[in-house]
Structure formats: structure tokens, C-alpha cells
Image (tube, rainbow, N blue to C red; front, side, top):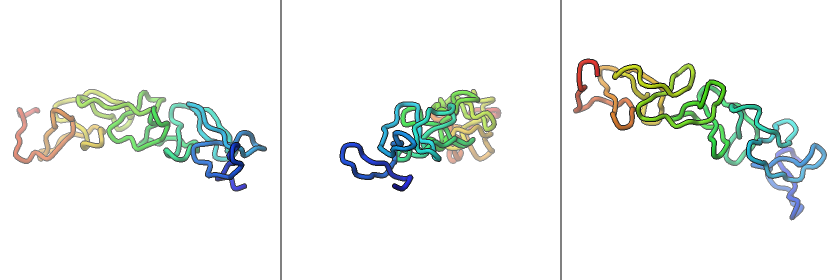
Length: 159
């Protein structure tokens, strides 16, 4: 049997392993993963997440993967995903944490921090990384995202 498959214990048919694991190293019967588990890429067995930076490869593939500095683990689906408008929960926990509109994501720690001044904002509406506003931008007071100044004006020389 290919290592990308497991055997359905009810039907006896082979199926794509997807979000399952093997029951044991000698038995490729499909095993449904429990919360906090992923599939070891070498053994195909279910293992507990090594830490808060480990998660599923995708919503259809439970192979264990480690998040990099541009990703976080979705706490609902366990999938490692682009960090986007999220931040890490702590320096050692890459679990996605939604960034409030009055904060941004520090580019080195990946944690949500308060704006350092009135010229700091989100990189974009979909990326909460902290960035300093240029002379052609302003910060949207509702979303925290930097945007083209267009027909708007700053509220003061420092803001």
C-alpha cells in the first residue's frame, strides 16, 4: 500500500490518507486524529503537536508541519496558514491571534503591539504588520490599515 493511503476499516477499501493516520506501524488501517494531533510524515502515525508552532499542512492534509515566521496555526482547524491580519499568541506560540484595529504585528516578535505613534499602521487591510505611514498615506481609524491619502488629510502634523 502506498504511504499516501490507509485502509478503511469498514469497507476494506484503500483511501487517501488525508486527515487521518495509520493505526500502527504495521497496520495501515485509517485512524481519525484527535484534537492536538497531526500525522508524522515518516511513520504515518498520529503524534501530538510538538509545540504551538506545529500544525496540519492543510485542511485536507494532516501531515505535521512547523510554521515559519510568516505563518500561524489556526486554533479551530489546526492548519498552518499565512499570518495575514493575525499575530502570534506569544513568542513561543504561533497560534493565530486576531490583531485589533488599534494594534499592529511587530515584524520581529510576531506579537500584537499598540501603535507606537499616530504614523504607525497596518501594512495593508490584509496584513497587520506594523509599518510607518509615508507622506502619501493615512491610517484608517476603523481598520488600522494604511491607505492612500487620496482626498483625505492628516488630522494634525503628527497624526
